[in-house]
Image (cartoon, rainbow, N blue to C red):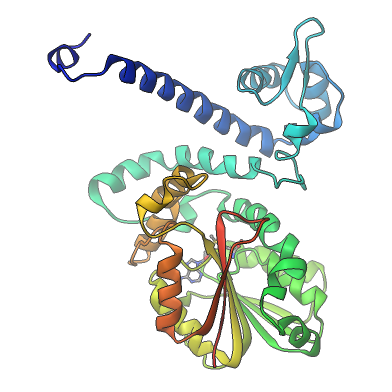
Length: 362
Ligand SMILES: C[S@@+](CC[C@H](N)C(=O)[O-])C[C@H]1O[C@@H](n2cnc3c(N)ncnc32)[C@H](O)[C@@H]1O
């Protein structure tokens, strides 16, 4: 026992032991999450979901990977409770109930996509140490694969539900899209949501703006490959966005809280919407008050993403750095202050960590 522990007569040894065990669990879970990212990126979960119980050699062959590495990864996944192991046959299996949240198109959403964020935290740790000591922000270019990862995330929270759950939130919008309107996706990333809308509604015209040249290049390439004439993408820093009453529908999918100044950004979007137009916004569903988020599933994960990405990219633009967990109350207040009316807030079953706002310009 250390000197500090021995001296403190209020020291609860049982509580200390229980917490040390908890730290062990945290280390195990973190290790499994980092390795889950590797499994996701290499297609190992998809391969295992399609195989009967198989040896490490068979799994490695099916995934076209090195057996020795795959066997060690399987040991992590087995001890981490992700795959099952038959020691007699030396075979591994991914139960269907586990594949249900770890594979592309999985019915519960592919949660392995989010494991990539844990891996990304390690990539930026050295720079984070510096920012903790000296302040300052980060740039999107500091995060390799960010836009690809974001596209995988929004494929399952946005693109897959656009026509069944999201656009129908805004009464009358789908009929207007059929007839032909002007649409902007602000902070469009690689543009998959806008491209899906452009394909579905040929009478409407779609614009996508994003700060990052690589994301816009990918969006232009995808739209070009589909031969779409009613969608355009442009690299633009929306900090200075100054279009006036040009759009009937503006969407922003997970793209407000990490702007330089979210309040000013929403005011600019308001000015760009025509009277009678609609803003559809997805953002993180946490509360602005830490104490309200204690029971929120994955709150620690979201605060961590905030700390290493969303807050620093806003600070890196010289901005407010409100962070991922700026809170739905803040978002709602900023929408009101921007001038929007009839603000509706929705939480959808397919996307429980986010909140969806539909707001209108009178
Ligand atoms: C979390 S990502 C969401 C991307 C996309 N909407 C999606 O759902 O996949 C936020 C996006 O906002 C963009 N962004 C951040 N600051 C911006 C700015 N000042 N001007 C334009 N876009 C910006 C980023 O480049 C990034 O693509």
